[in-house]
Each structure stands twice: as structure tokens, then as C-alpha cells.
Length: 167
Image: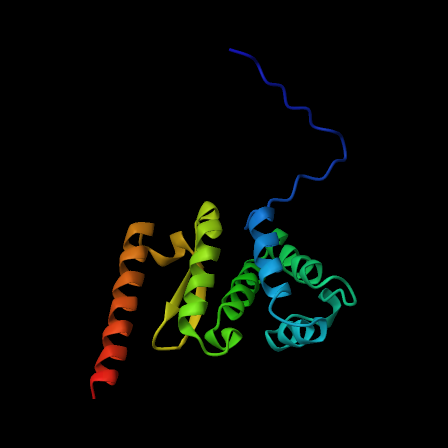
């Protein structure tokens, strides 16, 4: 069995660890970058509570978003992780898809394919009519239960829509 040696450099800072993998951050950033113009994206970020000092504009749209997401993801502060999750949740709001809940769900499913590798999930709240993003361990239920609940909620939404059409 090979032996591995770790060398610690004097006066070196420990490597920062991201809450969300960089590949996932890039995918999410590119998603928002494709949703609007530069000034629109700046406005959305500001409305979601991102300070102007963190918004690098002018820049390419996805890099501007990636920079904001990275700032929060690499932070050691819990409040910054909460802000990261809030921004991702806001990106998934159905109004970002012209009110199309199904399109928002498709985007959430796409995000969840990547977020799952960091034990993070985006879920829709029918009561609040928006998405919340959580660390799975903060929810207190496992991924299969989350998937079951999401499917159950989607089934109920479909039933409600069909009932409306029957009237």
C-alpha cells in the first residue's frame, strides 16, 4: 500500500472549502446568466439582498453571478450559506419563468441533480409559492423521503389543476 505524505507549508492558509462544488456553482450561474440582460441580473441580485460591492458589473453575466455565488459558498459564516441558498431559491421562483411552475420545476430538478452531491436540495413550498434550498441534514429527512414528498406534492398540484378544468 503506498504511503501518502502531506506537506504543510509554514505560514500557509488552510484551503477554503466550498459549501457547493464549483461545477454546480458554474451551472447555476450560467442558468441565471441565460435568463436576462446584465442590468436585469444586477437588479435581481440587488433585490435578493446581495450588496452592490459583491456584484462585479460590467462582467460577463454568468461570471458576475458565479462571483456572487462563490463568495457565499466559500464563506465560513452560516449567514452567508443561508444567503447562497436564498439566491438559488430566488432563481427558481416561478416568476423567473414567466409564472410557469412546470418550467421552474424542470430547472429545480436540473439544479438538484448537481446539488445532491453536496447534500443540498431545492424544494417547492406550495404554501409560500416559492423554492427553498436546504442542506439535507437540516431537514431531518433523507433524500428518498424528500423525493417522495416532492412527487406527492406534484401529484396533488396536478389533481387540483384537473379539478379546476372539470368545473
